Length: 571
Image (tube, rainbow, N blue to C red):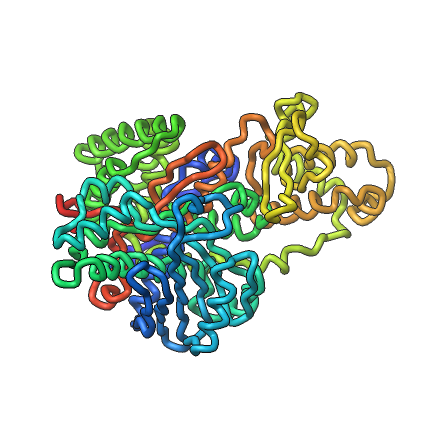
């Protein structure tokens, strides 16, 4: 009998969800790790379950690495094809900056199987990215650059008939890194609404994850192809166990950071699913021996993952040191004290709260879910959001009720001195050149006139002050007629009252703000690992490292890859 069958409503009621005041702090959100509910893992489980079939109908790449390839993924009802363009990019043009105009590879996810005419049309637009235009038959647009040193090393080794150096592969972890993955109507691509009712896209960002998954296959195929072109009689393919150690790198910056503030209902649904999964596991009254063994195995694999995780950023180095120490403490504790007593998972989590750093606590949350797919995986169906349904303001709400909501949800903000320069030091605005979010210094740059409404704590405090001074009709409608500048905060407060994890409970314009906390939170839900900040404003990650390739999904466990294997060869 599975854990899902034995967990009763009474058991579930004995453990409470963690408070938003704990979970929605930026230092904790910036310590999240991927877990069973992450979107990459959701995608691969679905493709395995539904028996998706993968083909490569086109691979027309020359000896210089220039040309086009098509990778098709056929599900139960539809086929999607990644149209991939390879380019011979001069080194001086290679940049991870969003302002770049050329890349080593560019891609579009096509809705169906493209004709030659479709490929020709895309060839005249996709390599230009923003400067081109795609159509509603394209679901995503992306681009990538080579990890120059490792890419050349891999091609050279294969051409000489030998395998790449494992240490170099482990240190970098990818042959290419994407610098943008666009969807949801960007540059003419299909709006998400056009595909939202398709079961394969119910979970968030599934089209984007599929694009990256297929792009990973392309990067390895390209390296092997170039090696064969150099030495047709001597070249070898990458050994399967080493192949798995390649993911897709990604450079993500400020453009992603405001997403969590701008999509409060979606943010709530992601966090709420993870918190509900944690509660379900903590509520289990006992633990079966196979689940204990599975946890111990995953703990060991998490320790190896931490060993493989490198960064040169002082903040991340400090976090990694804490994670190593936390995992050692956790291992020692579970060897002698777990399972112990009633609700052993609950007791283990409470021990972690008292003993481990936030980094270790959130790693434990992810590890506790690993043995319980049958108990928690259904929550992935709750992680999408109809944000339009929550957008309407309740104008009839009494003002005293709104005031009470503000005092409950934004109590942390009401304690901040918003007249202090350090508490309002930053300004979120949109770049006119790239239409991407940017973060400026309020007292050093002339950007304040262009400020975006991305400081809910400050704005909630201003609204609270005006409600306190209000002497008109005591409902929201009358108040907003006089104070339309508070419309967005009325909406946010009413949303947060219904969706408890909708609001970040921290100052998003403080001089102490670390945008990388926002980035890591979102990317952890994607399923990324090995977060490597390059500053406080952008981060490199690895996606799909250790995952099966398209031709391996049918025969492998599609969800046993999130951490590296404990075997020395990486297999």
